[in-house]
Amino acid sequence: SLDLSAHNLSNNQFNGTLQRLDLSAMAALQVLDLYDNDLAGPLPDAGKLPVKTLVHLDLGGNFFSGTIPRSFGSLEAVQFLSVAGNSLTGSIPPELGNLTSLRQLFLGYFNQFDGGIPAELGRLASLVHLDLASCGLQGGIPPALGALTRLDTLYLQTNQLNGTIPPELGNLTALRFLDVSNNALTGEVPPQLAALRELRLVNMFINRFRGGVPEFLGDLEHLQVLKLWQNNFTGSIPAALGRAAPLQEVDLSTNRLTGEVPRWLCARGQLQILILLNNFLFGPVPEGLGDCPTLTRVRISNNYLTGELPRGFLYLPALTTVELQSNYLTGHLPEDDSIPAEERKMLSLLNLSSNRFNGSLPSSVGIFSSLQTLLLSGNQLAGGIPPEVGRLKRLLKLDLSGNNLTGEVPGEIGECTSLTFLDLSVNQLTGAIPGARLAEIKVLNYLNVSWNKLDGGVPAEMGGMKSLTAADFSHNDLSGVVPQSGQFAYFNATSFAGNPRLCGTTIASSNPCNLTSMSGPRL
Image (cartoon, rainbow, N blue to C red):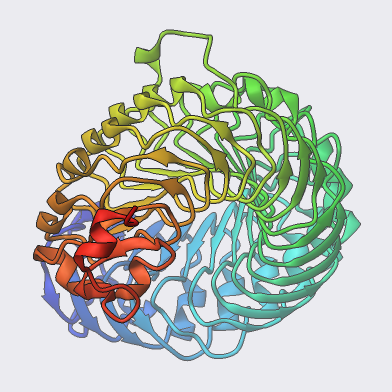
């Protein structure tokens, strides 16, 4: 026989089938790796393989179809078995439970198995890694899996599993990675899982779990990723969460959680992503988040948060996304008085709209050179719009509507040459519209300056803004002739309503231009 102990043929473009393959005589063959080729047809019967010696069999990432042969249960020496990423159907054969040497089993991704997880897999006493993700599994999680006491990784995500998590899974005391997300699981998380002290990752999002977020999650010392979003969890978030563990990502959004945001989330200084949106949380944004240099994304919109933002929070060095809209936050937006501006170029989205912020817009907003979206509408901001806004060269969307801003529209906004959306409506802005400056923005699509106290004329230069498809100048104190040229031909009378001193054919029905109205009242 050939004395080849390993055949690594992965990452080639081999196509065709394995129907004529017979390696059963290759008594020394330990490794057969055909991962990521273009092989099709049925899987080979185990009778064509050296069942006594084969330790590693990888047939993943091909186009194999049909079922997993029952004879695979006779591969007595195999420690690694993958048929993941094929087009297999049928049910998972219970005979796989005979593979007592098996350490890693991959059956998921693109395969579509009927029925569920065979309870016989609970006999795989050596199993360390079980990946059954994304392969159409139905039914419940078998309690028998609780016997896999060496298991490090259990991936069951993106199936149609239902029922509850069996309390027997509390016996998997070596488990580090648990993912049951994107299924139809119900009930409460069993308290027996508190024994899983080694957990690094807990993903349970997109299910129908109810009851409280388990308190034991706050005691785990190695937890890095906790994603429980889109369930029906109630009650408060464990207060100790983050105190003992190097948390990196926490997403508990779209539940029915109450109580406060835990204060220790970044206690170990590694938190990057915090998403708690669409809950019923109250109290402040925790002070500790203002001193969390690793933080990149914070999304806690649609809650009942109150109080002021932690000092330094908006100016954290790695922050890219802040969504705190639709809360009851108050206080001033802080000026930056910390590290030099060069160190902070990351923030690209800042949404603080629909809160109760007051005070003025800080001039240090100009340091966010990566900012693309700045949404501050529906607050109580006062004072002027700082000219430093013109430094935001990447800004695409600026919404300052529904505040108490005063002073003039700064011409520097015209230096935001990427701007497509500008809404300054419902404020107390005065003075003339800086039309020539705004006309420098070649991509502006939407402009709203309605419900202010702007005066002067409607700038004719804005007729040349070919990208401008929606503009609203209504309810100000503008006067003179409405321009007809360019884009102005597309705007109708509602864009100019509520400016009694405007005239022109666009608004002919309400106020045609004649010499009388142009020259003012006759003495």
